[in-house]
Image 1 (cartoon, helix red, strand yellow):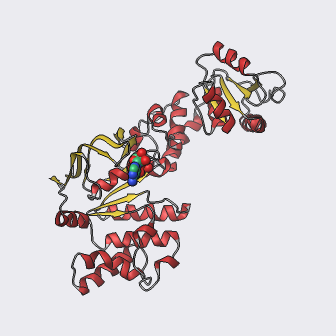
Image 2 (cartoon, helix red, strand yellow):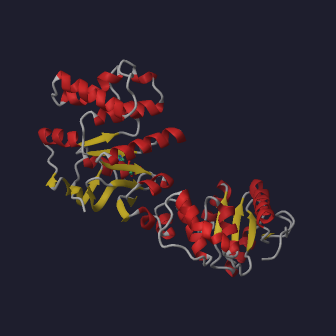
Image 3 (cartoon, rainbow, N blue to C red):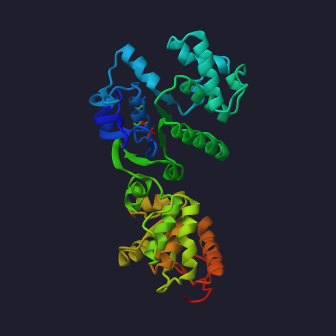
Amino acid sequence: MSSIILEARDIRYRYPRSMEAIRGISFHIRKGEKIALVGPNGAGKSTLLMMFNGMIRPDTGIILFDNQPVRYDTASLRTLRKRVGFVLQNPDRQIIAPTVYQDVAFGPTNLGYPETEVREAVTLALRHVGLEGFERRPPHQLSGGEKKRVAIAGVLAMDPDVLVFDEPTGGLDPSGSEDIMELLDELNLEGKTVIISTHDVELAYPWADRAILLLAGTILREDVPEVAFGNPEFVRTAHLSLPTLLELYIELQKRGFPLPEKKPLTVLDMMHIIEPLFQTTCCHTGTGTITVCNVDKDRQELLSAWLLARPKIPVGAMGTRAKQCASNEHIPLDFTYGVIDKCILKALLGEDTLILTTESMVERVYTRVDAYVTESGIHITVNPLAPGTGRAKKESGRQP
Ligand code: ADP
């Protein structure tokens, strides 16, 4: 196993006149690892990343780089920043010079490299990020993806051992994001340790060697992605969503299908898992019912009484008013996005659910369930909470 390159020992940090942003965090990162810090906004990801190259100094605890405690005098920080490159989320904040060449040359020039070495470092870095020929271009005329590459080249020109990216795909379109993630993989394959922060679970899940789930300045979980994201409770606590492939795997597991222990990281992995299942038959025990509460019409007392009689029923809410209603009435929500699909999944397991929804979205519940029933041939009943507030009861498809 390779040696440790970065380590945090019980670090804490509070911004002036603010709450504690990092609350006693310890972990280590090995040379050559791909690490994703994953958490919702405000979890402390950027703050933690900024400690890796000394931009922020912990109030207590220590950061070690290459087994040495980080020192904060100017000379030590200069050496550290050569070895730990930091790419900001917004390239406009990182790119400072009037041409691409001058910008990428800024780091090596500052480090006192002779002219020929600077030129060599810039050429190599621009080639690395696929921007050869861009030397004379003014950065402000470039696309978002190209600016990001200039910022990365500026860091690569110093040939750091560790690359830290704050939200590497923030503001990029899907294909620009894929390109950047591919570049990160390439750099990692060349031996760099790569650390990213993201709230994008789908991005982190197949990419990272290890994921560190952060919430409110503490580590909630730290493990290989299949394990770190494998517990729906943890994922929900971290205000994140399950990676789709993992969610699918868990749903198949609940239905008793024989599955390999190794969870799928890619669609291809998933295909390997599900192809043999086509020969097996799934055994439904009977479907659950989805009840729809129209929060714009249904009386509050009726809803309260209904819930009182079904204390454990999973509840989802669609629409701002429905979520507001749940909050006002202290109704804990099990689903707040992808609500209809999640209730269909529960129904397939034989479980009843309740959807709180606004008037305008009632029809969507029936339409989506209808579409599923037609496609699958499996019967699912949708009932309005109070007669006359939903659509007429739908019953179609065959009984499982
Ligand atoms: P993330 O990157 O996960 O979104 P941050 O590290 O930016 O989280 O923020 C962690 C916490 O620190 C948040 O509560 C945020 O409001 C606070 N914070 C971040 N930057 C500052 C700052 N410059 N001054 C005061 N508080 C800050």
